[in-house]
Amino acid sequence: MRKPRVMIYEDDIVTLNMLKRFFARRGYEVYSSSEPVVCPLYEIPSDSDKCEQKNQCADVVISEFKMPKTTGIELFRRQLERGCNVDIKMKAITSVYSDEELLKMCRDLGCRFFEKPVELSDLSGWLTECEKHYDLSQPLNDKRAGTRHVFNQVIEYFVNPEASHEKFIGITLDKSFDGLGLRIFNPLRTGEEITIYNRFEKTKKPGVVLWCRRQGKTIYRAGLRLLDK
Image (cartoon, rainbow, N blue to C red; front, side, top):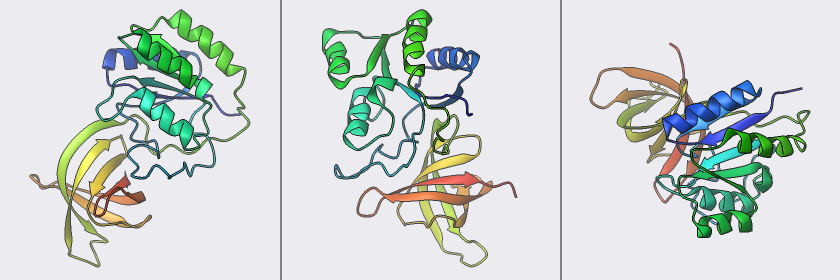
């Protein structure tokens, strides 16, 4: 029997730490990110694309309403339309604003709303109801990252450096303790090893490609696990 898992999208460190402590005390496995970069439906180019994950990514999801490139409502709506396996009733929006329009959007969508600062007693009551519907015998998808943070840096990288000296340029988007999210302009294959360099420093980091998806005609998003070598 596994632990329940929560996914939190929150860039305010005070709110994030409060939620992480609350869920950890309740026995949850806590994954967090300042933006929903780990969601396979985030920033995908086509409205026809569906979620390809076989299992849920989490039992419950909490998202800040206002994020740099989207809103929590837009994210949940996209997930609902494209086959996200997490029930919309197990998702909640947080915001310092609680105008009637936002409350109505949450009601119409079917998710819960919590005004910041979040009252933990209200959150606990909602979770008690959510937990009645968890199936902890069912596996969840492996995470692509634990805690991720926005991390923008121009990089240069080599693919299979022992076999090729061709250099490519890309941009890091986010990082975790063992991985990077990349925006690149040449496709990579899952399982390929690459070595990346900070364009303005001499440090290098080897890694293996976990996934790569097309975002535009010549733009790709990729996930990289860093290797200790």
